[in-house]
Amino acid sequence: MAAWLSRGVPSAGIYVGPVSWLIDTQFNYAAVPWVCAHQMPLIPIFALAMAALSLFGGFLSWRGYASAAPTPMPDSTGAGRPHRFMSLMGIAIALLFTVVILLHGAAGLVFHGCER
Image (cartoon, rainbow, N blue to C red; front, side, top):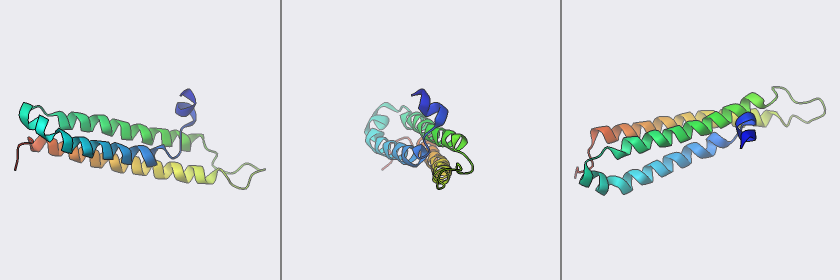
């Protein structure tokens, strides 16, 4: 676990961001009857948790970018470069899905769950 935090995972943001959005969207639809019955703003709270999870995937991608060598080692064929590109894509995708999750959570502040 400590190795993931220190070296990072270049593709973490590519997977964690969309999976967080998927879980958030499914929860939003599943929680509507409960939110309508109890009038508790549960959807924005859950959206914040999923946005934090998506940002954590972006953090792992950023750590992968920071730990990858900017130039290939002299005895390699350039194997370090795809890791940096994958890390940048992971960071961008994680940030994109974080914004989408937060926008879905903001809708939970406007709508109370009982609209028809």
